[in-house]
Image (cartoon, rainbow over all chains, first blue to last red; front, side):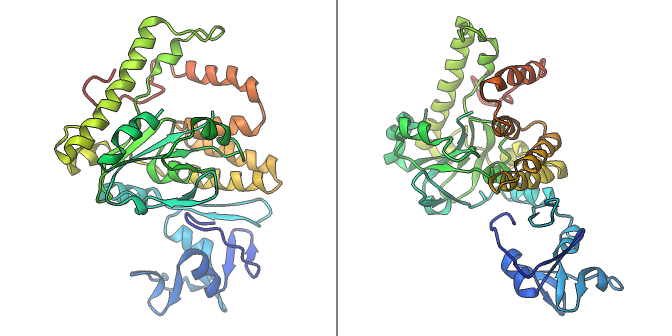
Length: 133
Length: 221
């Protein structure tokens, strides 16, 4: 699971702290792909440190956990290795705050209909939390 | 709480988006039905907005202008600690605490009105420098807390409540300032009404520290 998506990956291979994914799985789940320049998402590419290729690549597969740790981003997994959450680093949140751009999101209302922040662009928005507790 | 304000200002380019940081299926629904709001009331059971916007309690608000720019980072939305002086049996509040609570709420609503009327020239709409100065500064522990919370919620929903609760406990340990995480966990362990003594104990443990962070706004306590 990432910030924006939950993906079921039947071909993923978990070995302890390693999460080996095929490129199409990695890209589908996280947006990251393997290119000659390294591991890339959008316009950002992170070179694989020389001599450490085997930490990240094995045959066709990429260790998503190694990538996440290399990026300094938090990740956790269930005891049985069946569920992994790949999160966003504090530094990225800090950069977003510095930009003052309100992060977009999409969440359901009580009828299940989804709403995004961006659909209200052009209005002043009061985004307010509440809870039954 | 926001319906009247929304009705008053909705024809002036204003909308409220309320987000329920409620993880149990069906939890916020009775409250939403009773209030019958006409603005979007969204359900955020994984607390994604708490992560994106650094929300640690309810009610907290973010002001976002027409261009999608944050003009007031996340802050308590007119809420005040008055409830801490409530009689825990009778639930009565001393008159002065009730008055300050009402004033804090009124001050916040007036500030929103001022912003809707005056836009970026409102004193309450912060320029970039002041907005950045007030922006949260999440730590790596907070970032880890949000992944732990997400995993915990997922496991609870998928038949692994014990491991799930351990992850919620870890999330709370990593992000002790988050009442949203702590209160959610209390719900999961089904303490129900028995959670109240735990809640008061945790509030009392704050001592002089605020339950709601002070809001830098003229007239706020």
